Length: 429
Ligand SMILES: [Zn+2]
Image 1 (cartoon, helix red, strand yellow):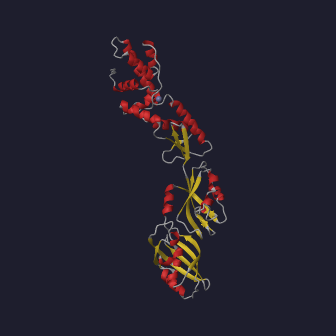
Image 2 (cartoon, helix red, strand yellow):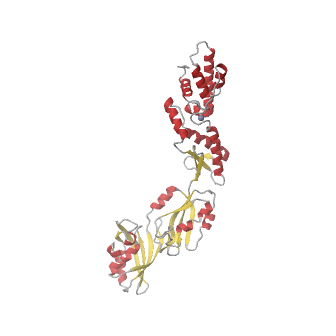
Image 3 (cartoon, protein in one colour):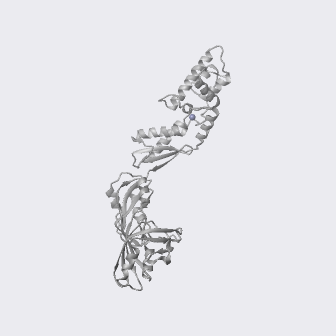
Protein backbone atom coordinates (compact mmCIF):
# COMPACT_ATOMS: atom_id res chain seq x y z
CA UNK A 1 0.00 0.00 0.00
CA UNK A 2 1.15 3.50 -0.84
CA UNK A 3 2.52 5.52 2.07
CA UNK A 4 3.55 9.13 1.56
CA UNK A 5 4.71 9.69 5.12
CA UNK A 6 1.95 12.26 5.35
CA UNK A 7 -1.42 11.39 6.85
CA UNK A 8 -3.38 13.95 4.81
CA UNK A 9 -1.91 12.79 1.51
CA UNK A 10 -2.55 9.18 2.44
CA UNK A 11 -6.19 10.05 2.89
CA UNK A 12 -6.31 11.84 -0.46
CA UNK A 13 -4.73 8.81 -2.05
CA UNK A 14 -7.28 6.52 -0.44
CA UNK A 15 -10.13 8.80 -1.56
CA UNK A 16 -9.01 8.77 -5.18
CA UNK A 17 -8.32 5.06 -5.14
CA UNK A 18 -11.97 4.51 -4.15
CA UNK A 19 -13.89 7.27 -5.92
CA UNK A 20 -13.58 9.53 -8.90
CA UNK A 21 -13.75 13.07 -7.48
CA UNK A 22 -13.65 16.47 -9.15
CA UNK A 23 -11.44 19.21 -7.68
CA UNK A 24 -14.37 20.77 -5.89
CA UNK A 25 -15.69 17.58 -4.28
CA UNK A 26 -12.20 16.42 -3.29
CA UNK A 27 -11.43 19.85 -1.84
CA UNK A 28 -14.68 19.78 0.11
CA UNK A 29 -13.68 16.52 1.83
CA UNK A 30 -10.65 18.33 3.27
CA UNK A 31 -12.30 21.72 3.83
CA UNK A 32 -10.89 21.98 7.33
CA UNK A 33 -7.36 22.38 6.03
CA UNK A 34 -6.06 25.61 4.53
CA UNK A 35 -7.52 29.08 5.07
CA UNK A 36 -8.81 31.41 2.39
CA UNK A 37 -8.99 28.66 -0.22
CA UNK A 38 -12.00 27.70 -2.26
CA UNK A 39 -12.79 23.99 -2.43
CA UNK A 40 -11.73 23.73 -6.13
CA UNK A 41 -8.40 25.37 -5.25
CA UNK A 42 -7.94 23.03 -2.33
CA UNK A 43 -8.81 19.94 -4.38
CA UNK A 44 -6.57 21.01 -7.24
CA UNK A 45 -3.69 21.63 -4.82
CA UNK A 46 -4.05 18.16 -3.33
CA UNK A 47 -4.08 16.58 -6.78
CA UNK A 48 -0.96 18.52 -7.82
CA UNK A 49 0.82 17.45 -4.68
CA UNK A 50 -0.19 13.84 -5.20
CA UNK A 51 0.94 14.02 -8.84
CA UNK A 52 4.35 15.29 -7.72
CA UNK A 53 4.75 12.49 -5.22
CA UNK A 54 3.69 9.91 -7.79
CA UNK A 55 6.12 11.45 -10.26
CA UNK A 56 8.92 11.07 -7.72
CA UNK A 57 7.86 7.51 -7.15
CA UNK A 58 7.83 6.76 -10.90
CA UNK A 59 11.31 8.17 -11.33
CA UNK A 60 12.77 6.12 -8.51
CA UNK A 61 13.88 2.53 -9.05
CA UNK A 62 11.82 1.04 -6.25
CA UNK A 63 8.25 2.24 -6.87
CA UNK A 64 5.62 0.73 -4.61
CA UNK A 65 2.61 1.63 -6.74
CA UNK A 66 1.18 -1.07 -8.95
CA UNK A 67 0.29 -0.23 -12.52
CA UNK A 68 -3.40 -0.87 -11.73
CA UNK A 69 -3.36 1.56 -8.81
CA UNK A 70 -1.63 4.19 -10.90
CA UNK A 71 -4.22 3.97 -13.64
CA UNK A 72 -7.05 3.94 -11.14
CA UNK A 73 -5.78 7.04 -9.34
CA UNK A 74 -5.31 8.77 -12.68
CA UNK A 75 -8.80 7.86 -13.89
CA UNK A 76 -10.39 8.96 -10.61
CA UNK A 77 -8.26 12.08 -10.09
CA UNK A 78 -8.00 13.38 -13.63
CA UNK A 79 -5.62 16.25 -14.30
CA UNK A 80 -2.73 16.60 -13.51
CA UNK A 81 -2.32 12.97 -12.40
CA UNK A 82 -3.87 11.63 -15.61
CA UNK A 83 -1.34 13.44 -17.86
CA UNK A 84 1.52 12.04 -15.82
CA UNK A 85 0.27 8.47 -15.86
CA UNK A 86 -0.55 8.66 -19.55
CA UNK A 87 3.03 9.69 -20.22
CA UNK A 88 4.61 6.99 -18.11
CA UNK A 89 2.13 4.12 -18.15
CA UNK A 90 -0.43 4.29 -20.92
CA UNK A 91 -4.01 5.13 -21.70
CA UNK A 92 -6.23 6.69 -19.03
CA UNK A 93 -10.00 7.28 -19.24
CA UNK A 94 -10.85 9.97 -16.74
CA UNK A 95 -14.12 9.24 -14.94
CA UNK A 96 -16.85 11.60 -13.83
CA UNK A 97 -17.04 12.72 -10.20
CA UNK A 98 -18.87 10.19 -8.03
CA UNK A 99 -20.60 12.87 -5.97
CA UNK A 100 -21.55 15.49 -8.55
CA UNK A 101 -20.94 13.97 -11.99
CA UNK A 102 -18.78 17.08 -12.72
CA UNK A 103 -21.95 19.14 -12.62
CA UNK A 104 -21.39 21.24 -9.56
CA UNK A 105 -19.72 24.29 -11.08
CA UNK A 106 -22.40 24.55 -13.70
CA UNK A 107 -25.12 23.89 -11.16
CA UNK A 108 -23.88 26.75 -8.98
CA UNK A 109 -23.95 29.10 -11.95
CA UNK A 110 -27.35 27.94 -13.16
CA UNK A 111 -28.91 28.20 -9.73
CA UNK A 112 -27.45 31.69 -9.33
CA UNK A 113 -29.01 32.75 -12.62
CA UNK A 114 -32.38 31.30 -11.55
CA UNK A 115 -32.17 33.18 -8.25
CA UNK A 116 -31.39 36.44 -10.03
CA UNK A 117 -34.31 35.88 -12.33
CA UNK A 118 -36.66 35.40 -9.37
CA UNK A 119 -35.25 38.44 -7.60
CA UNK A 120 -36.26 40.68 -10.48
CA UNK A 121 -39.19 42.95 -9.68
CA UNK A 122 -38.85 42.31 -5.98
CA UNK A 123 -37.73 44.75 -3.29
CA UNK A 124 -35.04 43.54 -0.91
CA UNK A 125 -32.08 44.83 1.02
CA UNK A 126 -30.88 41.48 2.31
CA UNK A 127 -31.21 37.87 1.27
CA UNK A 128 -30.41 34.40 2.48
CA UNK A 129 -29.85 31.20 0.49
CA UNK A 130 -30.92 27.78 1.77
CA UNK A 131 -30.54 24.33 0.21
CA UNK A 132 -33.14 21.61 0.63
CA UNK A 133 -31.97 18.53 2.51
CA UNK A 134 -31.57 14.95 1.29
CA UNK A 135 -30.58 15.52 -2.32
CA UNK A 136 -29.01 12.58 -4.15
CA UNK A 137 -25.74 14.59 -4.12
CA UNK A 138 -25.91 14.69 -0.35
CA UNK A 139 -26.57 10.95 -0.14
CA UNK A 140 -23.54 10.14 -2.29
CA UNK A 141 -21.43 12.55 -0.29
CA UNK A 142 -22.46 10.87 2.97
CA UNK A 143 -21.53 7.49 1.53
CA UNK A 144 -18.06 8.74 0.50
CA UNK A 145 -17.47 10.38 3.87
CA UNK A 146 -18.42 7.25 5.78
CA UNK A 147 -16.43 4.84 3.56
CA UNK A 148 -13.31 7.02 3.74
CA UNK A 149 -13.79 7.96 7.37
CA UNK A 150 -12.86 11.61 6.82
CA UNK A 151 -13.69 14.14 9.52
CA UNK A 152 -12.50 17.28 7.79
CA UNK A 153 -15.33 17.68 5.30
CA UNK A 154 -17.81 20.43 4.61
CA UNK A 155 -21.28 19.49 3.39
CA UNK A 156 -22.32 20.14 -0.18
CA UNK A 157 -25.32 22.06 1.12
CA UNK A 158 -23.12 24.43 2.99
CA UNK A 159 -20.82 24.97 0.05
CA UNK A 160 -23.65 25.68 -2.36
CA UNK A 161 -25.37 27.98 0.08
CA UNK A 162 -22.16 29.92 0.49
CA UNK A 163 -21.12 29.97 -3.17
CA UNK A 164 -24.52 30.96 -4.57
CA UNK A 165 -24.98 33.44 -1.71
CA UNK A 166 -21.58 35.01 -2.39
CA UNK A 167 -22.38 35.53 -6.06
CA UNK A 168 -25.82 36.94 -5.32
CA UNK A 169 -24.52 39.37 -2.72
CA UNK A 170 -21.88 40.57 -5.11
CA UNK A 171 -24.25 41.04 -8.03
CA UNK A 172 -27.11 42.59 -6.04
CA UNK A 173 -24.85 44.63 -3.70
CA UNK A 174 -26.51 43.22 -0.60
CA UNK A 175 -25.18 41.98 2.71
CA UNK A 176 -26.00 38.58 4.12
CA UNK A 177 -28.59 38.60 6.87
CA UNK A 178 -29.01 35.33 8.71
CA UNK A 179 -31.64 36.44 11.18
CA UNK A 180 -34.17 38.46 9.26
CA UNK A 181 -33.47 38.45 5.55
CA UNK A 182 -35.93 40.29 3.32
CA UNK A 183 -35.84 37.39 0.89
CA UNK A 184 -35.21 33.68 1.34
CA UNK A 185 -34.19 31.56 -1.66
CA UNK A 186 -34.38 27.79 -1.27
CA UNK A 187 -32.52 25.66 -3.80
CA UNK A 188 -33.29 22.09 -4.73
CA UNK A 189 -30.17 20.40 -6.11
CA UNK A 190 -31.98 17.49 -7.76
CA UNK A 191 -34.73 19.36 -9.56
CA UNK A 192 -32.51 22.45 -9.93
CA UNK A 193 -35.46 24.56 -8.91
CA UNK A 194 -35.47 27.65 -6.72
CA UNK A 195 -38.27 28.75 -4.45
CA UNK A 196 -38.38 32.34 -3.36
CA UNK A 197 -40.17 33.92 -0.45
CA UNK A 198 -40.07 37.41 0.94
CA UNK A 199 -40.36 37.77 4.67
CA UNK A 200 -43.62 39.19 5.96
CA UNK A 201 -44.20 42.86 6.59
CA UNK A 202 -46.08 43.66 9.78
CA UNK A 203 -48.12 46.84 10.07
CA UNK A 204 -49.56 48.12 13.32
CA UNK A 205 -52.68 50.22 13.62
CA UNK A 206 -56.30 49.93 14.64
CA UNK A 207 -59.72 49.50 13.12
CA UNK A 208 -63.18 50.95 13.63
CA UNK A 209 -66.47 49.48 12.49
CA UNK A 210 -68.97 52.24 11.95
CA UNK A 211 -71.72 49.90 10.83
CA UNK A 212 -73.23 46.67 12.03
CA UNK A 213 -73.23 43.20 10.47
CA UNK A 214 -69.59 43.40 9.58
CA UNK A 215 -67.45 40.47 10.64
CA UNK A 216 -63.81 40.76 11.58
CA UNK A 217 -62.83 37.80 9.37
CA UNK A 218 -64.63 36.62 6.30
CA UNK A 219 -67.32 34.38 7.69
CA UNK A 220 -68.67 31.64 5.44
CA UNK A 221 -71.94 29.87 6.09
CA UNK A 222 -72.44 26.15 5.52
CA UNK A 223 -73.49 26.59 1.89
CA UNK A 224 -70.23 28.42 1.19
CA UNK A 225 -71.82 31.87 0.96
CA UNK A 226 -70.73 34.84 2.99
CA UNK A 227 -72.57 35.51 6.25
CA UNK A 228 -71.80 39.23 5.98
CA UNK A 229 -71.09 41.27 2.92
CA UNK A 230 -68.27 43.17 4.54
CA UNK A 231 -65.39 42.29 6.83
CA UNK A 232 -62.37 43.99 8.34
CA UNK A 233 -60.27 41.30 6.69
CA UNK A 234 -61.83 42.11 3.33
CA UNK A 235 -60.84 45.75 3.65
CA UNK A 236 -57.30 44.84 4.73
CA UNK A 237 -57.11 42.56 1.67
CA UNK A 238 -56.82 45.65 -0.49
CA UNK A 239 -53.18 45.79 0.53
CA UNK A 240 -52.43 42.77 -1.67
CA UNK A 241 -52.27 45.20 -4.58
CA UNK A 242 -50.08 47.70 -2.74
CA UNK A 243 -47.46 45.14 -1.73
CA UNK A 244 -47.94 42.72 -4.65
CA UNK A 245 -48.26 40.06 -2.00
CA UNK A 246 -49.68 36.53 -1.85
CA UNK A 247 -52.15 37.47 0.84
CA UNK A 248 -52.99 39.49 3.91
CA UNK A 249 -53.57 38.19 7.42
CA UNK A 250 -55.07 40.25 10.22
CA UNK A 251 -54.37 39.82 13.90
CA UNK A 252 -56.54 41.86 16.25
CA UNK A 253 -56.59 42.32 20.00
CA UNK A 254 -59.77 40.29 20.50
CA UNK A 255 -63.00 40.61 18.57
CA UNK A 256 -66.44 42.09 18.91
CA UNK A 257 -69.63 40.47 17.64
CA UNK A 258 -70.38 41.07 13.99
CA UNK A 259 -73.51 43.08 14.86
CA UNK A 260 -71.58 45.34 17.26
CA UNK A 261 -69.94 48.54 16.14
CA UNK A 262 -66.34 49.20 17.11
CA UNK A 263 -66.01 52.89 17.89
CA UNK A 264 -63.85 55.29 19.89
CA UNK A 265 -60.13 54.87 19.38
CA UNK A 266 -60.66 51.55 17.60
CA UNK A 267 -59.28 48.10 18.27
CA UNK A 268 -55.53 47.41 17.96
CA UNK A 269 -54.72 45.51 14.79
CA UNK A 270 -51.61 44.04 13.22
CA UNK A 271 -51.70 43.38 9.50
CA UNK A 272 -49.37 40.71 8.16
CA UNK A 273 -48.43 41.04 4.51
CA UNK A 274 -47.54 37.58 3.17
CA UNK A 275 -44.69 37.22 0.65
CA UNK A 276 -44.62 40.87 -0.48
CA UNK A 277 -42.73 41.54 -3.70
CA UNK A 278 -42.78 45.19 -2.84
CA UNK A 279 -41.24 46.38 0.43
CA UNK A 280 -40.71 50.10 -0.17
CA UNK A 281 -43.85 52.04 0.68
CA UNK A 282 -45.22 55.16 2.31
CA UNK A 283 -47.76 54.89 5.10
CA UNK A 284 -49.94 57.42 3.36
CA UNK A 285 -50.23 55.17 0.34
CA UNK A 286 -51.16 52.22 2.56
CA UNK A 287 -53.80 54.21 4.41
CA UNK A 288 -55.23 55.57 1.18
CA UNK A 289 -55.65 52.05 -0.14
CA UNK A 290 -57.55 51.11 3.01
CA UNK A 291 -60.12 53.92 2.77
CA UNK A 292 -63.62 52.53 3.18
CA UNK A 293 -66.92 53.92 4.34
CA UNK A 294 -67.96 51.53 7.09
CA UNK A 295 -64.67 50.00 8.16
CA UNK A 296 -61.87 52.39 9.03
CA UNK A 297 -58.45 50.81 9.22
CA UNK A 298 -55.57 53.08 10.03
CA UNK A 299 -51.97 51.92 9.92
CA UNK A 300 -49.66 53.87 12.21
CA UNK A 301 -46.30 52.21 11.76
CA UNK A 302 -44.47 49.04 10.80
CA UNK A 303 -44.36 46.31 13.39
CA UNK A 304 -42.85 42.91 14.19
CA UNK A 305 -43.86 39.33 14.94
CA UNK A 306 -43.01 40.01 18.58
CA UNK A 307 -45.47 42.88 18.73
CA UNK A 308 -48.04 40.69 17.00
CA UNK A 309 -47.89 38.23 19.90
CA UNK A 310 -48.26 41.07 22.39
CA UNK A 311 -51.31 42.48 20.63
CA UNK A 312 -52.97 39.06 20.41
CA UNK A 313 -52.36 38.41 24.09
CA UNK A 314 -53.44 41.86 25.30
CA UNK A 315 -56.40 41.81 27.69
CA UNK A 316 -57.62 45.36 28.16
CA UNK A 317 -60.85 46.65 29.67
CA UNK A 318 -63.58 47.79 27.29
CA UNK A 319 -66.40 50.28 27.50
CA UNK A 320 -69.67 49.10 25.96
CA UNK A 321 -72.90 50.82 25.17
CA UNK A 322 -75.95 48.55 25.04
CA UNK A 323 -79.49 49.49 24.13
CA UNK A 324 -81.78 47.09 25.95
CA UNK A 325 -85.40 46.33 25.18
CA UNK A 326 -87.58 45.41 28.14
CA UNK A 327 -90.90 44.10 26.72
CA UNK A 328 -92.55 44.34 30.16
CA UNK A 329 -91.60 48.01 30.47
CA UNK A 330 -89.78 49.49 33.46
CA UNK A 331 -89.81 52.28 36.01
CA UNK A 332 -87.06 54.79 36.78
CA UNK A 333 -86.44 53.34 40.26
CA UNK A 334 -85.60 49.93 38.80
CA UNK A 335 -82.42 51.39 37.27
CA UNK A 336 -80.79 51.51 40.69
CA UNK A 337 -81.19 47.79 41.10
CA UNK A 338 -79.30 47.20 37.85
CA UNK A 339 -76.52 49.68 38.62
CA UNK A 340 -75.98 48.44 42.17
CA UNK A 341 -76.30 44.80 41.22
CA UNK A 342 -73.77 44.95 38.41
CA UNK A 343 -71.31 47.79 39.18
CA UNK A 344 -68.15 46.46 40.74
CA UNK A 345 -69.41 42.90 40.45
CA UNK A 346 -67.89 39.65 39.29
CA UNK A 347 -70.01 37.96 36.65
CA UNK A 348 -70.09 34.19 36.50
CA UNK A 349 -70.50 32.95 32.93
CA UNK A 350 -70.76 29.61 31.25
CA UNK A 351 -69.97 29.70 27.54
CA UNK A 352 -73.04 31.31 25.91
CA UNK A 353 -75.44 28.95 24.18
CA UNK A 354 -75.12 30.89 20.93
CA UNK A 355 -71.46 29.93 20.58
CA UNK A 356 -71.48 26.49 22.17
CA UNK A 357 -71.16 24.97 18.69
CA UNK A 358 -67.83 26.69 18.20
CA UNK A 359 -66.42 26.81 21.71
CA UNK A 360 -66.04 24.47 24.65
CA UNK A 361 -68.46 24.82 27.55
CA UNK A 362 -66.39 26.44 30.28
CA UNK A 363 -67.03 28.57 33.31
CA UNK A 364 -65.37 31.95 33.58
CA UNK A 365 -65.47 34.95 35.85
CA UNK A 366 -65.22 38.49 34.56
CA UNK A 367 -65.42 41.75 36.39
CA UNK A 368 -67.73 44.66 35.63
CA UNK A 369 -66.01 47.80 36.91
CA UNK A 370 -68.83 50.29 36.37
CA UNK A 371 -72.34 50.12 34.95
CA UNK A 372 -74.48 53.19 34.37
CA UNK A 373 -78.13 52.87 33.28
CA UNK A 374 -80.36 55.44 31.63
CA UNK A 375 -83.93 55.20 30.43
CA UNK A 376 -84.55 56.03 26.80
CA UNK A 377 -88.27 55.23 26.99
CA UNK A 378 -90.55 53.02 29.01
CA UNK A 379 -89.28 50.00 27.11
CA UNK A 380 -85.76 51.04 26.19
CA UNK A 381 -82.77 51.25 28.42
CA UNK A 382 -79.26 52.43 27.67
CA UNK A 383 -76.36 50.86 29.58
CA UNK A 384 -72.75 52.00 29.68
CA UNK A 385 -70.55 49.19 30.92
CA UNK A 386 -66.86 49.27 31.65
CA UNK A 387 -65.63 45.74 32.15
CA UNK A 388 -62.78 43.34 32.02
CA UNK A 389 -61.76 41.82 28.70
CA UNK A 390 -63.64 38.68 27.71
CA UNK A 391 -67.05 39.43 29.24
CA UNK A 392 -69.97 38.24 27.09
CA UNK A 393 -72.00 41.44 27.32
CA UNK A 394 -75.17 40.27 25.59
CA UNK A 395 -75.56 37.49 28.15
CA UNK A 396 -75.18 40.00 31.00
CA UNK A 397 -78.46 41.44 29.68
CA UNK A 398 -80.41 38.23 29.03
CA UNK A 399 -78.91 35.96 31.69
CA UNK A 400 -78.68 33.24 29.00
CA UNK A 401 -81.14 30.97 30.84
CA UNK A 402 -79.17 31.22 34.06
CA UNK A 403 -75.79 30.52 32.47
CA UNK A 404 -74.71 34.13 33.21
CA UNK A 405 -75.21 35.57 36.67
CA UNK A 406 -75.93 38.21 37.80
CA UNK A 407 -77.80 39.66 34.81
CA UNK A 408 -80.08 42.59 34.00
CA UNK A 409 -82.93 40.20 33.36
CA UNK A 410 -82.51 38.41 36.70
CA UNK A 411 -82.13 41.69 38.62
CA UNK A 412 -85.31 43.10 37.07
CA UNK A 413 -87.17 39.83 37.29
CA UNK A 414 -88.28 40.21 33.68
CA UNK A 415 -87.12 39.64 30.18
CA UNK A 416 -84.45 42.04 28.86
CA UNK A 417 -83.01 41.87 25.35
CA UNK A 418 -79.96 43.61 23.87
CA UNK A 419 -80.93 45.52 20.72
CA UNK A 420 -77.75 47.36 19.85
CA UNK A 421 -74.25 46.83 21.11
CA UNK A 422 -71.29 49.14 20.57
CA UNK A 423 -67.75 48.94 21.81
CA UNK A 424 -67.23 52.59 22.74
CA UNK A 425 -63.65 52.22 23.83
CA UNK A 426 -60.85 49.71 23.87
CA UNK A 427 -59.07 51.03 26.96
CA UNK A 428 -55.36 51.49 26.37
CA UNK A 429 -52.86 51.90 29.18
ZN1 LIG B 1 -17.73 16.70 -7.87
